[in-house]
Image (cartoon, rainbow, N blue to C red):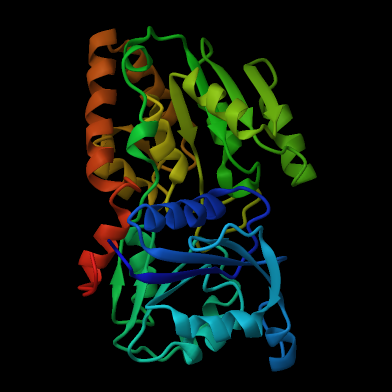
Length: 369
């Protein structure tokens, strides 16, 4: 029996389910599935990037899960989380670039413990961390993509990637892979300028319909632009949906379009729009073809899934249109074989089922199995 003791600590709250929250909770599940003793702590609310010591120590956390206890989630202060770290072999910090509590955790972890650090995209502390973090041989950045790993290489000597995005039993097959083409596409995620949804709309062939899933009210000006761009096309803005409804929209689609970009519609530029592209993996698991912009790390994920030819230059709606028409022109058997091959590659690269084993092997971790 595996008796490793692992504390997973999220410095960002888990209340709203997005990509980062999904990855944290499924990392917990992947570790617990090995029989390890594990516990999950999470910030109760978003924490300011910088706080004085007393404010940090009294920050409210939740003990969300404990494999050794059936108790409901319990509230505690961050100082109690720090004290509990001594009981574990591994302390794994998710969203470590969110706030300066990460430095307290780094100082708490002893040299005979393993510290793992995972960035899931919330990184207001990036500049300061890059300046003052001091690497130690028992520290590893366990990043969710090679793109994220390469960014972390600027401040640490030990990084690994990529991560995971689906469970083997979630992969759809049978009729889901062989169904006829119905000219249905979808966009799923936060409706914000860096998602490039306007490009997905512009690039949509006239005989396609597009379902957009996500909250349209996060940016009023952008929402107005999208509705103007959608005029005369078969576009439905479905708003935010529960997980089951969102999955149905995905599974009823032929194509998922991910048009994220670092150059925004209003001329602004951002450093990074994505760290993984979880929705691409989810699409393949559902038996749906993802079509993606070339914004990093999308090309990396698409290449690992054998779908490099379905990547187009960001903000190039004409190139997107040509890819969609090329996929439409394939016969049913070719589309089915393409989806089967991409699922086989997903099993090689992105399963949670063996995620903790892959992490342990990559860092050369010794211990009970």
